[in-house]
Image (cartoon, rainbow, N blue to C red; front, side, top):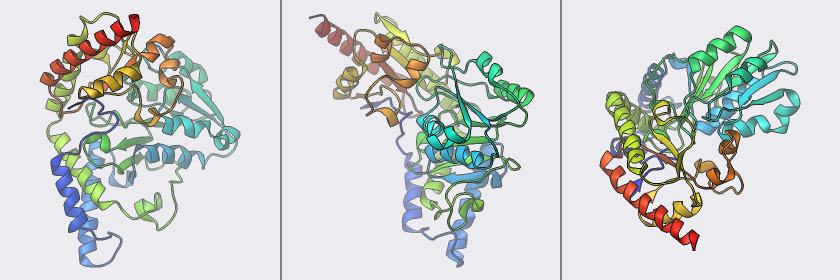
Length: 381
């Protein structure tokens, strides 16, 4: 099997699985309890938090553990909007993940605030002129993802933040960093809220985090026992957090080599497919995009048909975001960047991980070429 759907989820590192098992079978104590075994577990969790904070160039008390990227995005938006008084403007990219887009489409926030969905450019990036025109004094929040999960488009957060701070200095900035964190070189984040998810980084599902800058009004998420600085209640997911800590340590240790591996796999697959006619790149130029995402249209073949044909031959890919895989209709992201229906219907997303190899890309390209050629021949009949 050649797994090329790593933007949906990743195989857990063996080291992370071992630490997960240890937390499930030995260090299973609730860190909120008062006896020594629980206190030792609490110490491990806080050590993991401090390490994660360092990767985010943040302070430990600015890192809130969550159940994943969806909760982090939801919490960032609703936890900030709850504090707003009066009807204010909220600016959001039209190509956001559903966990941002659908939150701001909700009737509650539409009624309380003016939600403005900003257009995207053909490469999937935010239209800077549209953002500039929309930045008025009554803007309270701007949300734009760091790396687009379907196209790999990278947002220059420094440029975006500088523009927002100049034209709407009172506005907070949120960025969905789920597809960017540890896939791009670590850097100081010029934003107020930043969402991450660890099952995209070879840790278990069900654990993520939100960076929430101290001093920015923030009501947090679910209410209960006061965990996570009283901003996100619920029994601490010790196994998930410790397994994620191990995965992040491996990423940090191998960061440069793994970035090179991701880029090499992406380049190798694309180069191998260039001889196949009627293949189109969707989104930015591959060299300008994130190293682990490649979106291609194979004209004349339905993406869904090709996905299943490739799966039968052991190559697993996606037609778009996993959270939208069972929804009928147009692809919202590809529609937003102006792709015609034929390009949308024939689009596939390939996403890579450090566990992939360039040699796998040779075999994958061979299978893809044979499959596309066969399906196109069938269609002409």
